[in-house]
Amino acid sequence: MESDGFFSWLGNAFGEAVRVIIATLRWLFGGLGQAIGDFSDGVANAIGMSPTFFNFALLVLGLLCLYSGVRAFFARSPVAGIIWLVIALFLLGGLIGQPPAPAT
Figure (cartoon, one colour):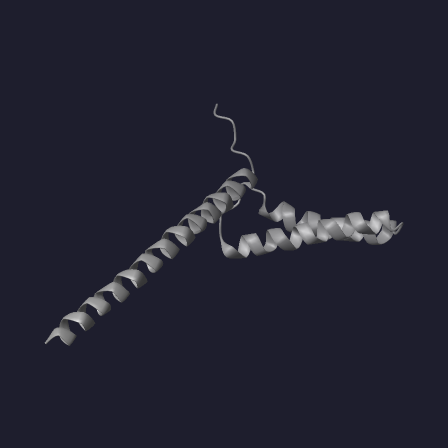
């Protein structure tokens, strides 16, 4: 009968240890997830776009095109730079929301 008590205690101790580990990971990654969500909402609000995955993908693509345009100008290729910057303008210009009209 004592072996039931020992194994019951061992099972409880193991279960408690697993529960503490899971609670710690949930706290750690839950805070990280909330921080990422708050950051993405802040970026979306500042730009004036809706915070969807598709819009963030277009934002990253537009920023990459902008980066490529600047690199092309530094590489002394103005035609390629202009083309990249126009593509970036189309992508990023479509994401930026219009400012609200002034109230009359």
